[in-house]
Image (cartoon, rainbow, N blue to C red; front, side):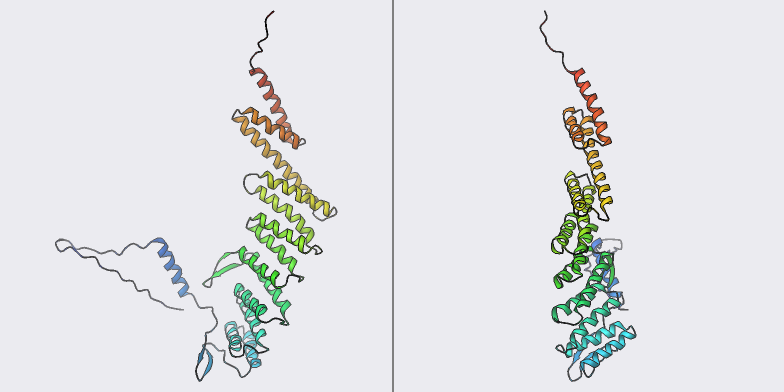
Amino acid sequence: MLRFSILYSVTRPPLRVDTPRRLRYSPPAMSRSSFVLLLVLAVWLAWPATAPAPIVYRPGAGWETKGQAQAAASPKAQIEQGLEFEKRKAWDDAISSYRLLLRRWPTSIHAAEAQFRIGYCQEQQRDYYKAFLSYQKVIESYQGFEKFTEVIQRQYKIGNLFLAGERVKLFGIRTLPSMDRAVEIYEKVLKNAPYSDIAPSAQMAIGYAREKQKRYDEAVAAYQKVIEKYPNCSLVEEAYFNVGLAYYRAASKSEYDQGYANKAVDGFNEYITKYPGGSKVAVARDYITKVKVDQARGLYEVAHYYDKQKDFSSALVYYNELIARHPQSSYAQQAQSRMELLRRLAALNSPPSNEAKP
């Protein structure tokens, strides 16, 4: 446990000599933001350290650590030392051992394996983002590494953890989930291995993450990339369906959006056309029905609003549009009844014609 002290000094204001009573000095009030900052700093400093044992170089003695890891005689021996620490789940010491190898023998044939195992140990510590960065260093620094495919798969799985709600660490403390972090990882996977078997799944997962953020246009763009870049993969059918679903959710997000509703219908219809025997055809048709009911309801509510404001001409415009676009809906029947009543009222309120008397 780390200990710390905060030195706080104030300048005492001059006291009046002629005052008969004893004055008390109160330090200036601390702002709320300063208090929160100090509280976070205190928790961070008091939190048990999770970083691997520090590695230092001493002239004449070489590389040393404050943990149990020690400089070995060769890169191979250093790797073996790290693996022994792993067996005991002494992850910090294992990381320190591998880092010693990278510092002493950065061009060794074992360097890539050492960097890979750092990422693996960080995964076991559930420090997933650091593990992702360590794996990324393997890809960027050691081209041709024999475990390249495994590295990509591990990065993808870390992205899935963040997609599922894994919390971001700040000063070693878990904070809030981050879909942006998931997207960052998936995008790196796509950059590292754009034509791998895992690439379509990573591209699809970006769409899922954006939907969770309610950033539906970006979700649609991600699904469309699956369709365009990987037209022969098994996820294309789902991508077509998800385009319609994302637009449907966008239309339902706040006030009803007729533009998104029309795009949702188009998206579901395209899915049905492309995959008439698809597993989600019935679900797509149900969504189309829901969209049309919602569209009819939206038009009826607008017409009803003008109706209540006694703006009958505007109300009739929307009632007419409702009947023309959704003639089979229950709202169309209500609109028809209301229009007939408005016409009768208009006839009763119209001024008599000025016909010439015989």
